[in-house]
Amino acid sequence: MRVVIAGGGSVGTAIALDLLDRHHEVTLLEQVTTVAERLKTLLPGVNVMAADACEYSSLVTADLRNVDVVIAATGDDEDNLVVSWLSKQEFGVPRVIARINNSRNAWLFSESWGVDVSVSTPALITSLVDEAVEVGSMINLLDLADGRMRLMEVTLASDSPAVANEVTLDELRLSDAVRVVAVVRQDQPLTPTPSMRFLEHDHVILLARAEAAEDCAEAFVG
Picture: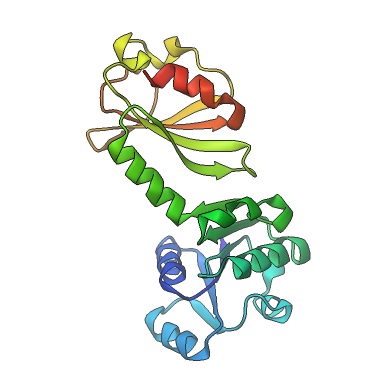
């Protein structure tokens, strides 16, 4: 795939290297010329451009009309919103991913601003802290589809209904709005199956519609 990344900071460069290793065609836009020149040496194989990604002309030069994914990864939320809006509204990029630097701005990162997926590092770190101290609590990891979908995790306690009742995933009878997408047991990721039974300390990753969050809690939280 062709991917354009806005922002040549630590986040943008790390993403660029990872995507390059996965054999994607990567272009990185960095506003500061001296930084861009340095990145050209540090990122062989990445097309580094000294350009302001918030400028329409820069995105034209980057040939955004033929790009599969744009990642707005700057350290400024306003810039990321502008990049997202231009990418979607002016260039019709199929998939736009935006970084949220300040979790208080998360409500802005929606489809109306051209954002398909938003990633909030502060919110994710907070969730991981919550997870560490709140075994048995449902933790919201990520909001998707403008808040209509949620990626959640729960670390099962001994009194979790799924554990205490020794039921299989199929026997839990979860609603169609809920999917168990992964189970991590003793640091090993497991693919959920209808016959799977749950154990104390299992990390259960769920994808659910926002209104179905209570269904998840009834099944996995004691």
